[in-house]
Length: 306
Ligand code: CP
Ligand code: NVA
Image 1 (cartoon, rainbow, N blue to C red):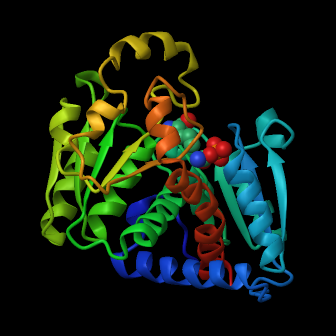
Image 2 (cartoon, rainbow, N blue to C red):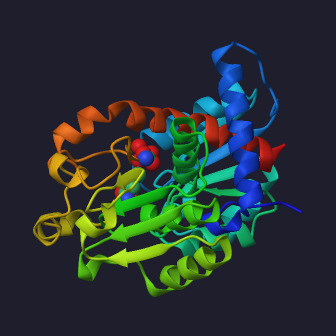
C-alpha cells in the first residue's frame, strides 16, 4: 500500500529515525561522490500554489541526484487553476507519475489529493504543516547535539505550520518542547491535545506560554519562524505590533544554554522574529538546516517512491 507524508504525525518515531539515518547516509554519499540512483526512471510532480526557493530547488535536485526527474507544476498553469477538480487531477497524475509533492493552502486539499491518488503524496507545506522542513530540522539537531534524548527545544513565535510540525516531531523523538506565542496566535486546540498525548507517551514535557523568557529557559535549541506566513501578507503590519517582545535577541538568548543552537526554516525577516546579531552568530546551523532539506527529502523520496 502506498504511504503518504501529509503531516508529521503520519510518521512513527521509528519511521522518523529511519528517514534520518538514510538522510545521513545519502549526505555522506553525496559528499563522497558515491552515485545513489535509487529512483532511476521515476518521476515526481511538484505542484506549487505558493512561492518557494528551498523546497522547489531541493526536491528537484534531489530527484536528479536519485536518478529520477522532477516536474515543476505551477497551479496557475495546471487546469486546477481553471477549476478542474483536485480528485480528477489526482487520478490523471497517478497514471503518469510515481509521486507528487504539493505546496498548498488548506490541509483538506492535500488530503483530497491523497485520497484520490494511487501514488504517494508529500506535503511540501500547507497552512497547517511543514513536515519536510521538520525532518531537516531534526537531522540538523542530531548533527549538532549527537542525540535527542532529554534536549529542550524552544519555539518562539506564531503558532503556525512550523510550530505544529515541530511540536509533533520533536516530542516524538524524545525532546522536551516549550512554545511561546502571543495570546491570539497560539497553536490550535487540536495540536495542543496532540502535543499533550505525544508528550505523555514519550515521557517528555510540553509547555505552552505567552512568555518568551519563560519558554527559552535552559533551551538547547531555539527556533523561530516568520510572524506572517504566506497568505497572511495583509496582516503583516498588525502582526509586527502584536508580536512585540517575541524577537530572538542576544538578551533573550541569555536564558538559553550557553551551547544552544538556533534554527530558522527561512526565509527570515531580520529585526522582526530574529535580530540580525543572533542570525549572524548562528548562521552555520541555520544554513546547515537549509542544506539538510535536500538530504532529508531524498530519504523521504526513497522511502516512499522506491
Ligand atoms: N523553508 C522553506 O520551505 O523554504 P521555501 O519557502 O523557500 O521553500
Ligand atoms: N510559516 C512560513 C514557513 C515558510 C517556509 C510560511 O508558511 O510562510
